[in-house]
Length: 57
Image (cartoon, rainbow, N blue to C red; front, side):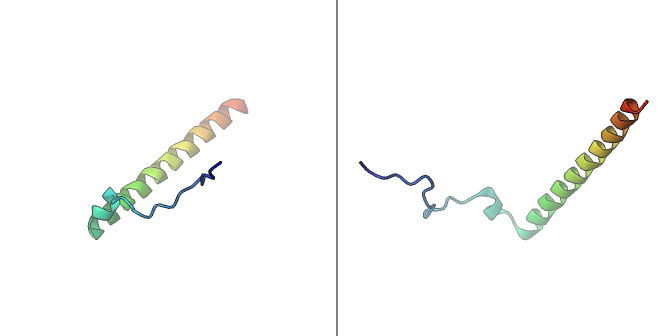
């Protein structure tokens, strides 16, 4: 019986789109992700507050 590793090492790493981006493009992409997450957190806080008001009536 042969043993098989659950996770095989990635010796021949495939080039990813991230690796092809310039430094400026990476910064723009990261900033857009930060802004989207901040907006989602803001929306979530608003919905939580509204839902909390409805429950406490």
